[in-house]
Image (cartoon, rainbow, N blue to C red; front, side, top):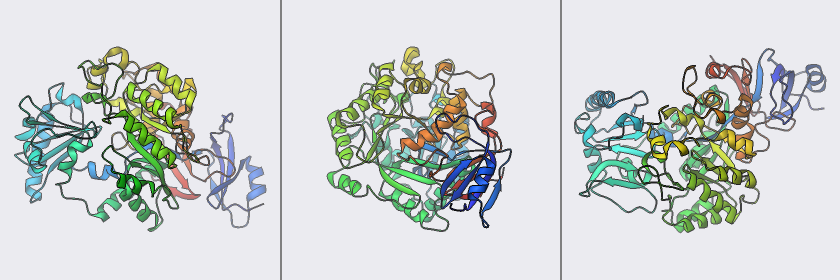
Length: 543
C-alpha cells in the first residue's frame, strides 16, 4: 500500500457521496494531490501511515470538499471595480455627496482622471430616468462612469459621453443600447457592454502587473472562505494568458480555475476561428474549453427576454438580432467540442436556450452538459425541461439582496407580482431533479462563499433575523446548498473528481471549525474556515 504524504486525522467528514450523510469522525489519507482513502482512524493509519507521513490533527473540525464558485468574474472585475464602491448608497443625496468627494480627490490627485464608481443600486433613483445632468454638477464637469451592481447598465456624465464619442444612438449587433431622448440626444444611460465600451477605451488602462497582482489577491480571498476553485464567465485569450502567467509563477494559482470565453454577435469568422483554436489550452490548475453566450440582458432595464412583456411593455427581445444566429453559434461550438454556458435571466431567454440546446445537442463530445447561467425568472414548464434534458442550472442566489419586500425594486416592479413570485426557483429546480450549481457572480455579489451558502438557505439577509424571506418554499437545506457549491459546481464544469471526498478524487478540501450543514445558517457567514487543501497542499487561514 502507498504511504500517505498527509493524513487528516479524526475530522467529521462530509464526503458528498450520495447516501453518506453521517459526518462521523474519520481520517483522510492524501498523496500526490489525490485522496488515497477515507475511513475509520485506525484503519487509515494502519493502511497508509508511513515513516514520513505528516499527521494533521483535525479532531473536532469538519472537512468538506473544497468549495467551487460556479460563476464569477475575478479578472474582468479588476477592470470594472475601479473607483467608489457605491453599495452603501441608498438615495440620490448620498450618491451626490459621495461623487462630490470623489471628484475633489480626482482633481487633487490626478491630472486627467475619471470619476468611477460601481455597485450602484437601481433603487437609488426610485424610478427616475437615468440622466447625465443628475450627476454633472456633483462631479464638477469631470468625465464619469458609474456602473450599477449588475454591470449591465452604466450612467455617464456629459463629459464622459463626450470623451467616449457618444453623440447619439448607434446600431449594435446585440441588444446593447445608448439610450436617447425624444430629440435623439444621449441621456447618459448605457445599456450592456457594447454601449459603454467606448468610454472604457478612453480610460487609462491598468498595467499588466497591476492586473496580475489584483487577480492574485482575489484568488487568495477565495481560499479564505473555503473556495478552492471557480468558473470564470467572461474570458478571452487575454484571460487565458493571465491564468497561464499566474500558474507558472511562484507557487502557481491559489485556486483551480475553468475559464469560459465570450462569443458575442459581433465576433467575426476570424475571431471564432481563433477561439476554437484555443479549446484545449490549460495548465496545472486551469483550463478553457467553455464558451459563454448571452440570451438576454437584465430585467431591471427591460432587457431581460420574457414570454410576456413587463409592466413597462419591454422585455420582448433577445440579445441576438437573430435567434437563428444564436442557435447556429451554439451548434458551431458544440460541434467544435466546447461546453456552452449561456446567460439567460428572463423566462423566455431560459426557454429559448433550452430549445437551442435541444436542437443541436445538450453536450459536446467529451465535455460536460451545457449549462444556463442566472435563471432569475423561470416558467414552471421550463423547470421540467431542465430536468428532462439534464441541462445544468447555474444560479446566484445572493442577487436577491437587491429586492425590496414591497416589490418596489425595479426587478420586481417590471415583472409584476405573479412572475416575481417565480424568482430564483432553486428549490423547485432541485425537486424536479435538475442539476443545480451555485455561485456568486462576483463582483456583483460578495465573493465569500459563506455568504452565498447562507442566502441559499435563508433567502434573506444573513443576520437579519426579522428580515423578509423571499419565496420561502424555494429555500434550500444546508446540505443542498453545500452540494451546490461543491459537487454540483464540480459536475457543472465536467470535473467528476472534484467536489467529493473519495478514493481517487483530487485532494481539494476545506477544513471548518464546525459543521457547515448543522450550524445555523445565520452563523455561516462567521463560521471559520481554518484551512484549505489544494492538490493536497495545505494553506492555513487566520481568523
